[in-house]
Length: 385
Image (cartoon, rainbow, N blue to C red; front, side):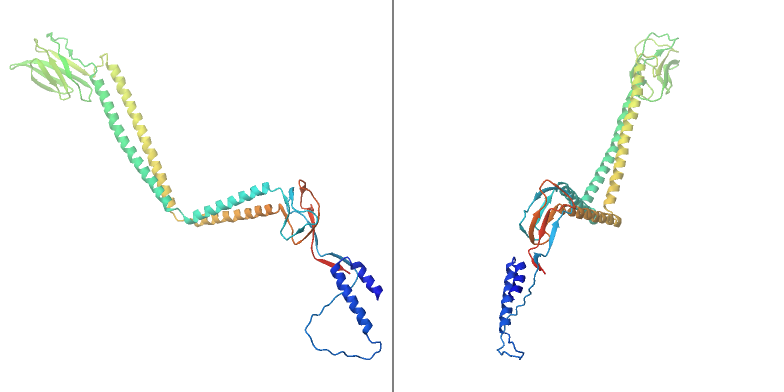
C-alpha cells in the first residue's frame, strides 16, 4: 500500500491542493483496509441518519498543466508603439496587451465619422425640404430682382429722354450754325439785314424773302420751307413759325430785292464742327441706350433665375433624392465600421483572464498577422493522467 501511495504522490506533489486531496484519500483507504473483516460474514453497522456532505476524489499519476495557452497576434500590421505587460503579469479579459501605430487608422476613423455626419445632415435636409426661412430668402431675392428690372426699365426711359434731348440740341446747333441772309445779286439796297432768334424746325431747306411793290406799298413774301407775306417796313419780320426773325435796318429797299437763308448753312465756317458734334451725339445715344438695354436684359435673366429657384424651394422633397441621401448614409456607415475595425485592429487585447507566460517582441519592432506579441495561459490547471 505504501508503494502505491508513493507512486501516486510523487508526480502530483507539485500541486498542493491535489496532493492534499490524494493524501486524505490514501489515509481513508488505509483505515478502511485495516478495519475490514477477514472472514466472509456480512457485518452491518447501524447509525442514525444525518445531513452531511459527500466528498468524491480521484487519484492517479500524470502532469499538471494549463487548460488553455494562446499566442496573442495582432489583427492588423505596423510598428509596435507600446507593450503594456511583462512576463508573469496577471491580466483580465479585454485588458490591453500591446498597441500598434494608430496614426493612419485614427485619421481614417475621423474622416469616416465626418462623412457619416455629413451624410446624415444631408438626409435630414432632403427629408425636411426647404425651410420657411430659405423660402422667404428666395422670395426676397425675387422681389429684389423685380425691383432691379423696374429700375433698369426706368433708367432706359430716362437715358432715351436725355440722349434724345442731347441729339436734338446738337441738331439744332448744326441747323443754326453760321446762319446769315444772302442778298440777291440784283439787289439795289445797300442795307444788310441780320438774323435774330434760332431755327427750331427739323426740316432742312431754305427761306427766300422777296420784296415786291403794290399799290398799297412795298410788301414782302416768304417762300421755301414756309410761306407768308405782309406789308414791309424796316424792323423785325418773323420768318415762318420756327423761331427765325430777320431784322431789316433803316434804309432804302426796292421792288425785286430778295435774301436767301439756307438751313443749314453749309458754307459757314462753324458748320463742320457743329455737324461733327451732331454725329457724335447720335453715336453716344446709341451706346447709352444699348448699355441701358443690357442692364434690362441682365435684370430680366436674374429675375427668371430667382423665380426658378423659388419654385424649386417650394417643391416637396423628391423620393428619389431621399433614397439617394439614405444610400449615402448607409455607405458612410459601412466605411465608418471598416475604419473602426481597422482602428481596433491596432490594439491587442487579452481574450480571457490569465497570466502572461512570455512577451515575444519589443516596442518599435514590426508586427503582422503571424507575429506572436505574447503568450497567455489560463489560471485554471488540470492534471493529465
